[in-house]
Length: 389
Image: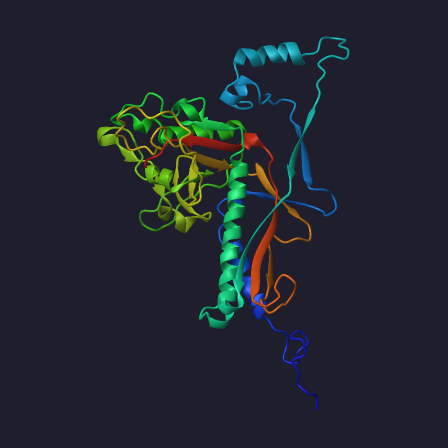
């Protein structure tokens, strides 16, 4: 009869030990716990041994306005064109005369985008006495905390890269973020001019449509349940809790015609698949709340003297709050083939070596590679507003 053996733990007759895999699984689960920003990123990959730079190219359509053109910033690609300009363009630039030679020549333009891989990682070190005397499942806890930390770092990297878009709008039709809050009254009576508004959201949606961005969702037709709502096909916007606070109370109209324009998600959730973090809809936009949304502290205009309004500020200038509108094909993260999103490493205090001569010190760590790239800035919109404190 064969003898049951433990062997080295992996060739045991009772089966390989799995507790280490259980530890790592806890960390990996937390490393993917939140995907508010990552859920809108396309996935690209690059083979190893090809350097650290990732490049991707695309051709511009011949009929596109140049993105540096003033009309593009105001009207997008093919929208709101002057009928006279279109007519003259067809007559002067497209029409062929009898016996025409090599005329009306056009050229295409190829543009290349580049991003570079960067490595990130953090660690927790501990002594052997933690294992000897702690009553907690500390091995799992360390991995869970590192996994959650890595998840936050990844979300922050994606968010900051998305905010690198040059396609921006500002409340009250201002030209730059530093003008947000210009001319406000000290008593706060004009504050709403720079908060998120129904009209501002409609303008943002219009800008994306003009830029040929595709809506993220289809029409929600509602359900048979009482008090449910039908909502239009929509873009998504990622906002922080401060903007969510202002959205909840938005109305339009006056006196008896006043109506709330924000629809909470619970009124259409039963008839639609909600995105992670989705909390409501207004006009042609559905909103996602991000607890980690960044704020440009003090990036707005100077607050008026003796200001008693309710807008967030740092004591000298108003704080600026970005809203991100990611649409299909606008942004991507790049992974290395053969490498997972995150790698956990650990060493037990029991391993005696030159740096650990008494066998008293161990560690847990994670490391990950990251690269993000804006694929089409015209379809990735940032809208900056002021918000209630």
